[in-house]
Image (cartoon, rainbow, N blue to C red; front, side, top):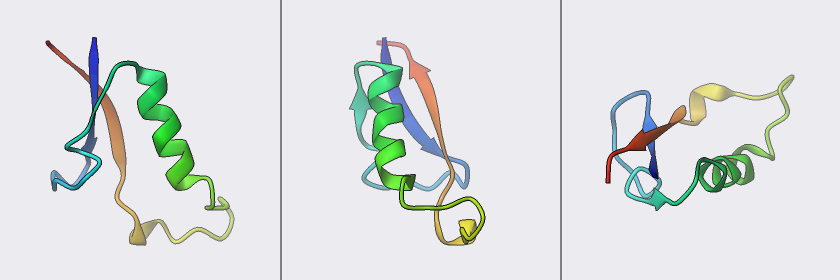
Length: 57
C-alpha cells in the first residue's frame, strides 16, 4: 500500500507530493511537524490540516 497526505484546503505543497510506504510513516511525519503545538495555545489557522489517505499502486 502507498499512503499520501492531502490538505483539507485542496492545495498542494511539499508534503502532499511525498509518498509513504506505511500509514505510520506518514503519521510520524505529521507528528514531527505538529509536535511543537500545545492544544491550549495553538493558532490552528496558521497551519494546514492534513489527512492521510491510501492510494492504489
